[in-house]
Image (cartoon, rainbow, N blue to C red):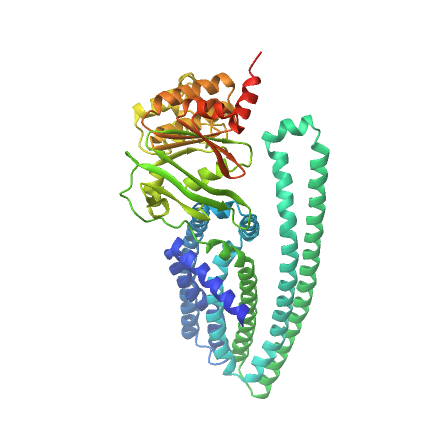
Length: 591
């Protein structure tokens, strides 16, 4: 019962999604189910009266009337249901697109901490398997209207069959029930096979993706990885074939048993109704009607029960998908909108942080203040916690303890859209998109030409853009446009910097902004930044200390704690960790 209630909940969740995607599909499918359920009764009822008339009084006019009425009703119902089916076929696409849009929207809105949680990633992979590989949601969209149609048909044919006698109902139900039981057992075994297979499919798709991924081409050739990749790919392929063979053998066994039982069912039904019709002197028309009613009831009942079992199986497939979709989206979406950084102070106050699922403190009691217009460089070795500070500042995570404040106001109480308007970040693992240069820089917002030109100029990308035949309308990459351009790593980084500059936010954060640039280009970017960011608060995260001489303040992190704090000259004179790192890097440029 507990399992059934869970499946009912999942089914309800699914129906709500379908209704949200296309209410017209739900209404059209309901109407088609009711009308489609009427069509079998034309072949059940009208032949009785036609045959009895032909075997009895043989009135041509009445026989013609029966034929005409049957044809007209059948034609009208067929035309309406055909039209509804065509409409449903068209709107099914809307349902699927709406479903996919909901999935995408939720994935983009889910709390960011989930995206770095291995458990969430594993859940997402398992949850999307029935959607991507089995199209479970597509089949469920069709199963539900069919279920309603067969239910109405079964009720109608049951009423006709009961008017004959109850034993005929038992004769029909016994083999049908056995077939359904076999189907249930088959589905249970099949779902176990498919779950085993889903893990192997993940590996297969990974190796298959590597083979198709041109970005790995150089490494594959240099390190001669082709044999290893093909070996792993073929091993996965062999195991998947074994799974499919098991599933095929299981399906063949079930189909064979079902056909034998269906043959026995037909024989028992014809035999019982035939004998009783002779004993009670029933007409041939009545015999035909009861046989058709028995056959229709049997088929409809089997289909109902099979669909019911299939829906239960699909609900089990979608259980993890529902778990995924019910994970909370970002909190704090609504809040204060009266906060700005004009003459304000950004403060980290005793901030400590552990990543979800871990106990190790990545940041330990970090405190510092940054006034509007100041520039700060956060430096330290790998793993010191530099990027984590930016994730907290960006509200991708919340501190485990302590607060991040703007003018004494906790940033988590600020409306998230308003807050992110105050902030512009170039992440270390930034992403550009296969859109035009203009869309990449402006993020699809209304274009301010002067601001766009300035952003390209200050990022060092203006000359490159001007050299392109389509200028800022050039597509980044050639996946969708053969006239697009392939930027180098350094140029893509400049494009990301241009996007951050164009936003013109109060606080600009650059996490390893020049990692892909050579020392000359790096110096050029920092000099331009320094000139442009006079009235902005700027935070630099870097391994290389080139940015530090432009900054009014430097924080040196080690093991999540601030161990040195001051300007460049002050920290060099301390002869501490900062000075050691600076001297080490400087020595590499001495000829």
